[in-house]
Amino acid sequence: MAGGIQSGTTATSAESLLSENRHIDFVADVVCGMGEEWEIRKSLTIEEIMGYKGEYSLKANGESQEWQSDGGFILYKGALVGVCENKWQKARQNACERVCKYLTFLPPKRMFVSCEGPGFLKKNGGGSTGPLIDMLRHAGATVLENTTDEKEFKNQLRDWLQSLVSV
Image (cartoon, rainbow, N blue to C red; front, top):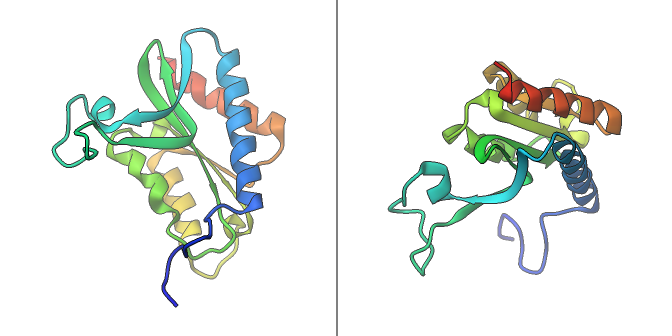
């Protein structure tokens, strides 16, 4: 049997979809409540991120490829200030490090990551989920671990958003 996602299957479980939708709803509620200067964009082109057209990140038609984010790219007064990403993990062994792609163009303090699922429960035993949480926090990212309480999630998100524009 071949590895990876098999033909006719999906990588999204019901639990993952629920976690992602909760994340999207909470982020949208908070950002919309922050004022008209705030905006959420589901995706950005690589050209928008880099400020110029890349040589390798082009579609067949010559247009720039794009990156998408679960919670969206956060803009303040038209400028990219952060990204909100969700990751649901059942197992502890997975390539959850894809969230680290944002480190290629954003300082860690501009990353808000909500991690959810049994794979993100705090316990010893190896895997890639524990080091992801530790390293993101070490770098300065805001990371929520299995935070499903709406008030707690939104308060932490609001604090993070305000930190992005405060001097």
